[in-house]
Amino acid sequence: MGETPPTSGAQANRPFLEMRGITKRYAVNQVLANDAVDLRVHRGEIHALVGENGAGKTTLMRILDGWERPDSGSILLQGKPAAPSSPREALRLGIGMVHQHFRLIPELTVAENIVLGEEPRRLGLFTDLSAASEAVKEVAARYGFTLNPSSRIRDLGLSRMQQVEIVKVLFRKAELIILDEPTTGLTGGQTEALFSGLRRLAAAGKTIILISHKLRDVLEISQRFTVLRRGRTVASGLTSRISQGELAALVMGGEAAAENVRRRVDPGETVYELRGVSLVEAGRRALDGVSFRVREGEVLAATGISGNGLEELEDVASGLRRPTEGEILHRGRDISRHDPRRLRRRGMAFVPADRLFRAVALEASLRENLIVNRRRELERAGVMLRSRMADFCGRLLGRFDIPADQDLPIGYLSGGGIQKVVLSRELAAGRDFFLFSEPTWGIDAGSTALVHNEILALRDRGAAVLLISTDLDEVLALSDRIAVVHGGRITAAYRNDERLARETVGLAMLGGEPA
Image 1 (spheres, rainbow, N blue to C red):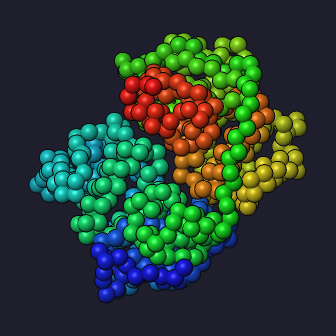
Image 2 (image 1 turned 60 degrees about the vertical axis):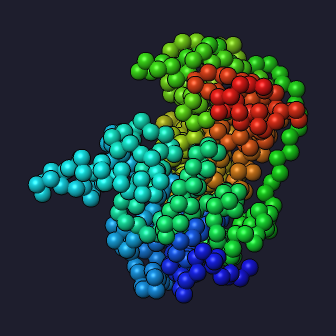
Image 3 (image 1 turned 90 degrees about the vertical axis):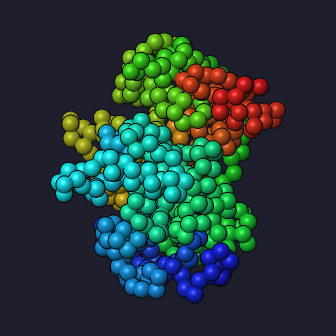
């Protein structure tokens, strides 16, 4: 598909941004992340940069934001050469990036985070917090965001934190705003609110680049798109002139994502059970009398809106926090006081939502991350057997075709690559119970299909699977039964069959009366 002229709302003699022939190869692993990439973005438009994990999207934007330096190629901003050497230099040029993983200090207030490094001064020496709060209020109000400058970041939900990050770059007078997978972890309502804010920014003349693998989001919010595949630009054009199927084919290279074929299995004995589990912290009942069971050969999905107890449920189920009241049973044995290591010894496996900080050590090698729970099997007399270790890791990497050196730090992989490593490790470690929490956050369509198929395969082999997910489509695609968590309690439960309407579960997630 050839380049298409910009929409009528973004007519200009020249693009606001041009990236020409951008090439970037990482010396540490010789991965060619960008291969002569071209990108044209016009002022006042929302431009979607689309592709699978590892396609080169984030690398390209990190180059634009000054985090990386290209090996070759050029950048033109409003027709003039630009070569940002750091994020600070990029901001001076009017470029600001909102990263997928927020860069905020939890203990500081909204205002303190936003003005950090650019603080208004009193008497030339002291930070003027009153002036900072007023400046933040003014910028937020100008673009239709609602923020309390005195709130602390630790008390905010994901959508509010995202607003803080956006206002932070607006405060620094960014004209081009890059958002990396901005809807990851957001509910449907929060996504709609974000999109309304982005439309207001575009209407005010701001230029927005949206990095995304969610095709539905791309079609809803963007005017134009550019597709990267394997580090190259493969298509660009008007979003209004392409269907979701056509866009998916461009992203996947004509390869169809694997289809989740569900086979009904009669569940067996109870493997995992919560009985009246409560978690009280700082006087608040984050979980309140939660009870459910997961049986052999079934997927139970616990779903709801973020902030209603799903995060705490993950912590309790994986042994990171002990319940204040109630019991957790595995095969009838009380495991309420077991830590994660003891739970793993019982053959229980966990894929957490926060894979970067709870599932892997980013600076450690792939090998070290893969063997972390299997060291005893790979040593003799306290000495690690290198050949056995290499064979074990090679099998795990080969299972999901992860093309990486075992000595490479895992932090060099894309989000989808890291998720594949974690998945391969946990599938090899677990026996009869598997917990998946938000398993497809931030990964592409191909990786999502892989994860979904593995979950269904576990179920079909007779394992008990607890799926914690705020993604209603994912819940409906994978689960046999659904438990809706609202306000720390299970407020509705459903059998996932042809009679269950999507709207019914959605209403319950929002706190409506269960059907």
